[in-house]
Structure formats: structure tokens, C-alpha cells
Length: 117
Length: 109
Image (cartoon, rainbow over all chains, first blue to last red; front, side):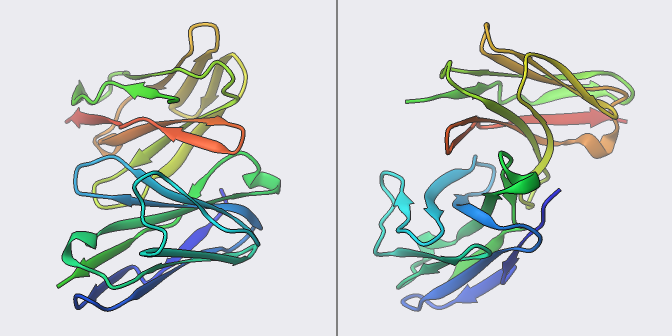
């Protein structure tokens, strides 16, 4: 299958700081990228959908000013958690879908575990 | 609200048995159907996708789709302890994906 990477794989930050998470599609062009968060033993929660070159579409209840998403190229999307607080601690996972062999399927990155102290 | 429903389980099967995982969806216009496996603490991994009615086999996995009944299932033959994970059903409609909450499977040695 297609390969999606995320960086960093884990991060610990202090409350009030901002954290940027990168998501890259390594062997295909991702026209659409998705950002999820997942709490322990809970299901995936879609945060936003982004298409290359356009503004992200946020799910209801997700603060767009807090979770900034940029999808500047066909292989890179970033999620910035601004002014992070302990309740933002979670597992953040991106996924990507694009042309070719990833036309319909959605491939996930390995996830980023964020801990806010 | 487009819904994808799965029995949360846990589902337990003995090693070597067939594990059957089920999923129903509400949107009749759905076009693509996926099964993901998620190990604890890891991100989901795509294991099967199916677009047409009928069965699709890949190794020990068989996906079954019945659009008339709005039902998709995953069979795992010769279940192994390494198959113990949460299995997520996902349904695609246009540019949207909808995930079920997952079924936890435990394969008992």
C-alpha cells in the first residue's frame, strides 16, 4: 500500500506552547488529507479534512483557531496545536488519499502522541 | 447523519477458528468499503477494501459486501493470536469517509 509518514512520533510540551505535526505522503500525491485524534480505548474522531491548496473543513466542535491545518503541497499537510493545554493530550493521526493506487483508499500515518504538561 | 455501526465486542475466538466481523451502514449511496486493523497504541492499517457486491479474498481474509442489505463483513480464517486487535469498518461516500467504532477481537491460543 501507499506510505504515509508523520513527524514527530511523540512530543511532550508545556502548557501554553504550540506544537506542529507533519504528515507526508511518501510515494503518492495526496489530494486529500485527514486529521484524526484518538483517546485511549476510544474510536477515531475526525477533526478536519483538507484538500491541497484550499482551506481545511473542520468537523463540528473542532476549533479551527486552535487546530491550524495547512495542506500546502500534494505531499505535505501540517497540524499545529496552538496554546496547547493538558486536555489536548491525545494520539493524533493523519491519513491521506490521492491518485493512482491511493485513489479511493485512505492510508494512515503512524500517529503522533502528544502529551501536554 | 451517515452512520456506520459495528458490534464493539469483545469478540473472542479460539486459535484456528474463523472470526466473523460485521458492519452495517446507513447511506445507500456509499461506494467504497474498507476494513482496517488497529493494534493498541498504533494507527489503523488498511487490510481489505471492496467496491462491488460479493466476496473478495486476500489470503486468510475475505470481505463480503451486500449493498442491498447495506452490510459488509470481514472473515478471518485460521485466526492467529497476532490477529488480536480492533477492526474498524469504514465506508466511503464521495470524498467522505465514515468509520465505525470498531470491534475488538481476541484470538485465544
